[in-house]
Length: 110
Image (tube, rainbow, N blue to C red; front, side, top):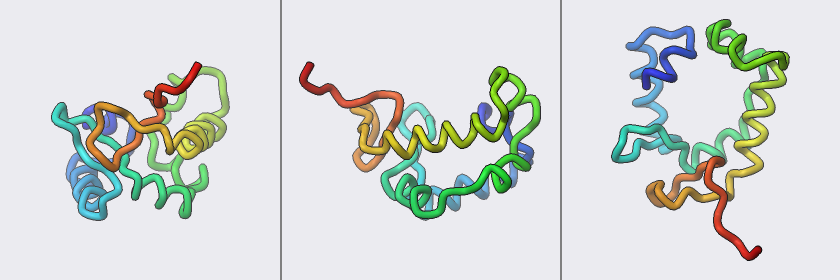
């Protein structure tokens, strides 16, 4: 939560409300270490309602974007969202059922 708070132009009360709402809708969940995980329902929602960079960028602190390197901010965010959506079938073995992670692809035949 601190990582998200450091990136976004939002107060703590706003973040808690959004997190509560997203959890109630089944779009995100928390694991036993309080990590936020996007659920299958959350990825499906993003796939059907993909936000534009113009909708996302006003909510991100400029310092968070600048620290990403030399890429244009819009390209970084769109690429991250596209990668997450492209890898949505990758299931994290440590995550609760119904959650996905682009970080840990499933083991497959070599």
